[in-house]
Every structure is written in structure tokens, then in C-alpha cells.
Image: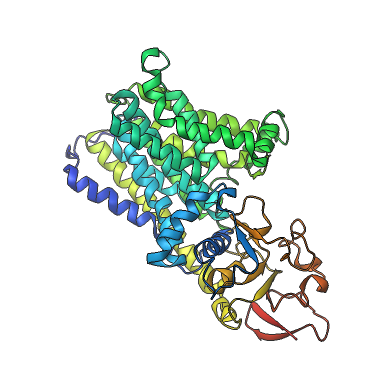
Length: 506
């Protein structure tokens, strides 16, 4: 039997302007993991910084990019991420521009979720349950364009509902711009938006089909053109047409669900906050029993979205064409898109749940910041001093023998050599210039020593690097952990710290 809250005052929600301020403060707090330390433990973050540097400073002779690389911006699936980052970099610089984009994901997801929840007729305080889900395993991987697509997708769905219900030129333009932005940002959230849009579409009102669907036609046409003309699109279609390829058994998928969603840290604190958030959500649902459900009928169509995410997690494999970790992205998406389906009790009961949810959400963000600070202080160490030892616009190979962390899961140091290219330019290895969907590539006659892209998993196997791959092409070798023993006359140790070492040619 649920406890009575008759003794609590039946408080009204704060005035609209105050509520705006409170949600803005919540979203601002949510951005803290993006800027709390200089080197957040995101595996692909250094790679994105290096790519952004090449795109933004390609013609700047101080970085020496034009000699070795050629830009092909329309070759990338993340065009908008790097274009927007480059524009911000004119004002903020490359590093702070990328921090701003990370903040757009973290804080923007809170605000976009609030907008969607309100359009669905739900209590906007449900949005608070988004906070513990923001720093997830996909964030730890550093899949930043994919993650930035999440608030864009949520915003697209809320504006799709507005346009379908009350179409106007303004709603059509806004919806069309968001759909185009999603396609240019990342195909995965664009596909998620397409599923939601199909579910929300007024299929029972044929007279409204043209007006409802017209704004998204440009984005849909670009998607069809991409699928028909690009190698990545062909590979993706081929993979999707092969049912069951790489799909795990159901029991293995269930066991791995937490691994691909909430298991960020080595200790159990992230799971604890997830369990607390789930418990508060259950209490909220229980205390809301008997209250009038004010959610609008359109919520039933929206509910298809988290259901589809769950189904796709169990029925798709690790690879779809060139897209890695395809099925593994759906647990995070299922959790985030399920938030609007929660319930919030009214009156004093709602006040208790709101305070509890906010405490858990802010506690989860604080827990992330504490772990990031420990990572920076105890494991990153004197990395910046190592970078200072290397002259700008040179060639640097990274041999990361010690990739892992005692604080976070995955391999946060795997791409740390990319910080050199982000700050000082030049050529690095491992380089995303080897990747098919990168916005820049080596010029045909400027490949590193082997004359072709690096072998598969080069960055994962530093012990397999032969001296012919390194000398005399690279000016420096950056190492973390022991394992590099260059022959005499090739590289000598210029500097070493507790974990990092810089080796110079000659």
C-alpha cells in the first residue's frame, strides 16, 4: 500500500518563466562532463578533434595539411558535425568548439526531451529521468556525431507532431530543416526519426498525406540517393537483406544489454545510479495510479519507437555495411526514447518524486565528473608535457601499449596520438585518413611507408609494428607503456614521464 501524502502541500508548479530557468539550469548541469577536465576518457574524442582540426585548418600553412591530405567533405557521413564545429572554431578554437558540440548533446537532449514530452501532453518533469542516461557507453566510445543526432531526432519528432496536427509554412520549414540536419549529421538518428515519423504519420487521413509529408521529402530524397549511389549505402542494404547475420542468441543479448548501455565505469556506481533512477520511476508510476492520465492519443503512436529499438537490438548484428556496433546502439536509444512513456504523480506526491528524480539525476552527473577528474589526475598524467616535446607539423606515430584505464571501461588512450594532430597538425598514425568515410584522405602519392592504408587494427597491435613502418618516415614515436625497442640509429628516447615517452628520429 502506497503511503499517504495528504500532509504535504499541494504545490503548483512554478510559473512558466521560472520553470524555464529551472530546466535550463538542469541542462547546464548536464553539460559538466564535457568541460570538467581537459581530456575526458572518450575513446574516439581525440579522433574527432584531429578531424575537426584538418577540416578547419586545412589551408593554414602552420599545420602543413595540404602537402599530405586532400579534403572530401561530401565523403563523410558526419558532414554537419564537422562543418558546424569548424564554424564554431572561428570563435572558440577547435577544442572549445568540440566541447560546445558535446554540450549540445548533453544539455540539448534535456531540452529537446522536455519539448517532446510537452507535445505528447505529458508532465514535463518526466524529463529529469533523462539525466542519468546521458553519459552512457556510446558516449564513452566517443560516438559524438551519433549522439548529437539524439536531441536533433527528439526535436524533429516534436516538430513533426506539431506540423501534422497544425500544419503551416513555419512548421513545415522547421521540420524540413531538422530532417535535413539529421541526414547530414548521422544516418543512424535520421533512420530513428524516419521510424518515428512513419509511426506518427496521419495514415487514416489521406487528404493530409501530401501536406504532412512534403517537408521531409528533400531529406528523404537525399537518403535514397545516398543509398543508391554510395558504396557504404550498398553495403548497408546488402547487410540488412541478410537476416540473422551476426545476431546474438537472445540470452547473450540480454546479458550484454547493460554492457552496451550503462556500464561506463569499472566500479558499480554507474549501475547504482541507474537502479536508483529505475526505482524512482517505478515509485512515480505507482504513486500516479488513480491520477488522470493527461497524455495525448499521439503518445500511442510514439510508443512504437522504443519498442522498435528493443526489437532491432535483438534482431540485428554488430555490423551493417560499414556501420560498426549497429545492434549495440539500440539499448541506449531504447532507454532514452522510453522516457516520455513514464508517468509523474500530481500534487505533493509529484513533488516528492520530482525531488528524488532530480537528486538521482544530479548525483549521476556528479558521479561522472568525479570519475573524469580521477582519470585526468591519476592516468592522463604528464601527457601535455609529452606533446610539448614534439615540434609542430611533423610526422608522429602512436604506439599505445597501455590502452586501458582503471577508472572507465573500453580503451580511452587508444587514439591519444590524435591530440598531436589536433594541436600541432602534421601526420599521425593511426589516422582516420585511412577510413573510407573520413572527410579527408591521404593524397595518392603521400601514403605512409607502406604506400597504402594501415593494416587492419594497426592501433590495437603496437607490438606488431615493424621498424620499417616507422623509420625513417616518422619524426617522432609517442608511446604509453613499455614495449618499444627501436634498433640503434633509428629512434632515441627524447623524453619520458611516468606513463608517456617521446622517441625522436636519429
